[in-house]
Picture 1 (cartoon, rainbow, N blue to C red):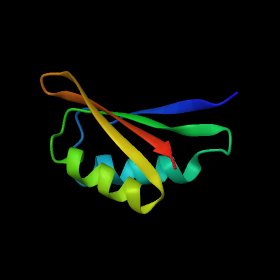
Picture 2: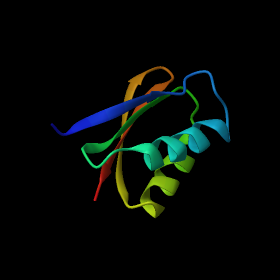
Picture 3: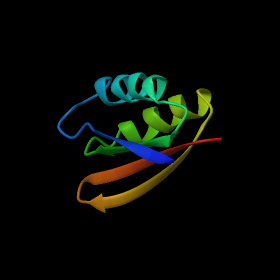
Length: 76
């Protein structure tokens, strides 16, 4: 079954949200469609999608709180 892994980096500041996201993306199995990252650190909205695209993922950002976002990274 295809599924998304989840990563919660709320409370963490740069560069940790991006670094943890890259580590998590590299650990995904072939059955994982992608990764959903939850963050409350606005700069991560730039750093995470930029790195994910370099690794071959599409990124969609959704605001879920104030301040809180879900970044959905899906394999291309």
